[in-house]
Length: 439
Image (tube, rainbow, N blue to C red):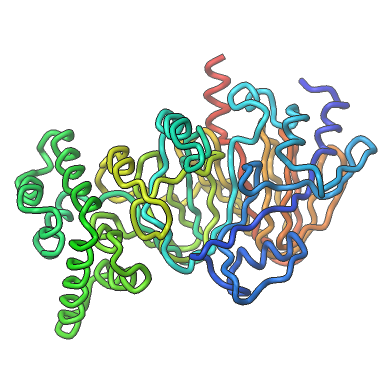
């Protein structure tokens, strides 16, 4: 049990955060971007209507650090201009809880983001821990983290993505109906896939898919350009006599945005996923994916390692990506969330580092976020209300754009004035259950 003095100290360690933005080219521009609006409200910045606003980062990663906004801690002020959340947490690890410190050290194990996606991100995957360490050692300027990066995307708007490989049945249909792919991968790999069935050994299925996909992604620029040109011409012609499938329409869209890019054709190998607001998608290590459009909450282990192979002008590492993938097939799991009460829905991915709560609180209503054994970050994504820190009995007004760090074992009571939309991320509660069972 903690002493009352320690508990009061932790309650005073609830800070507003000034967070970072990334203006990647694929971001939504100007005022249409939720990232832009949140960043402007959070930092006092002015939105540039011509600038893309792609990612709003909340956490301790060096590529997008958060800073403490001046608050009172034991009678002293904290200077937001010089104190990063990372350095403060490192100096005050008690705010993380001993279980988190024992597992991950004196740092927050998750990175919290908002994404505003106007055009597709690269076809990419994130390495597991072992590969992350190896890549970081070999190419530290490219792969800056020695940590894995499992992640989850929770849709705020309608959200589209490519994720994981289609089933064997679907892949066979692609090989029968997309002759440009057969031309790129050759008859041997095509026939190898077509002769398989679901009863075959899983290793044989994965080996055939790996060979075909690697052949596609490694094709020469001239072959890629020729295949895409033929594909575009064929689909435009066929669209005059039949409706195109959703995947075919997507491929034509991708071609306009990334002409002569192998990712255009690689999209046929991947599941086309459409999330509605409140649905989530989790992505483990070594799984191919590409976000297409929409806005989402994204949470992940604290890492920025990305291995790209298509739909990007950035550095590509095709051989590493093709070698690392799991080649699991089938449609990904879509999380609907678990209702915790009438206002809070919890999204629980199969990763220790994080979980996410989505809270929609009508005007005049109140809700309690129970104390957690680990730290949390709260994002006010819309509305206005008050946040009461139960132990300190201090009440603060909160509104859209506010981001708050909350230490472990801090119960939070929130009351809305205007309907609030709040997202909270913290360490996965199942980690603490496992931790205690292992003791």
